[in-house]
Image 1: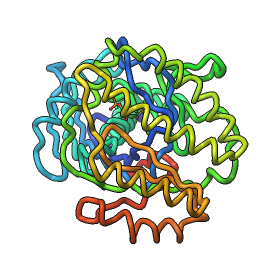
Image 2: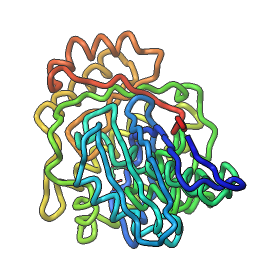
Image 3: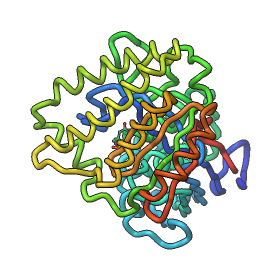
Length: 356
Ligand code: PMV
């Protein structure tokens, strides 16, 4: 609900967006400058792993600085409050209304926070969508839709790189690549290729091996790429895999899809293990699940594969037509390896939705 004064301008009101997480098939790992990636990444936007953020805003008459309160799942959350205040305080040049604003932010997730599911992607994309909506309301300047999403992607990126990809649905790319001039390091865009129908309704069973907070967060991980002996080779590998993935998405070559996706997941964890200090985010059950997925694939010829985020949970990716067989695999063999039998029945989604 927005209270308007004269013309289209409102000084107070409420906006609410629901924004999804995403899972990268080609991984972003290593950054420079202000949240710019060393290599392009490509992700699937999810449908069920969502953050809902509501912001009650008030733009005061006096310019006495941005202030905010942050509630996570109904409770005051000081750590998020500090992070979001820091983040938004750096955006005053782009969004000058913030310097007079008081924001009351309420956020909640449909999935466990800090469990290796990219909660920062959905959180910062939802926050960015809200800030863009407030900016339109308080300035009265409505942007063309394409600019709105591009600016939201850029703002989301400044909070968390992977958030740049969560403002769009389906297959999304962030980061420059020599073969694709439309890609940018500043913001993400829809993948620049036609998609074979086999990839239209891809599913992602997220197998929760552990809900514990990660020992090494992604900021520390990105930083370790600076002195990583394999950094240059990794950025070349990602560029190569991204180009191959375009061909795969266009042709529907599932064998090559599986090869690239698993190679990227294991490369990401290989980089973590071989950094200095090295660290291990996979757990015993992560390895057992991977082995079972690979065995199932070789026995049944059903094209399932896995990917991993920066954590122990396993994303089991499969085309919808194999759902019954995959559900059987999950129930009989994989759930006993999950924390409290927990998994998220997710899949490709359409991107953020404005609720109010
Ligand atoms: O967005 P960040 O800074 O949390 O980095 C995320 C990196 C990975 O999730 C591991 C890979 C990716 O591309 O999403």
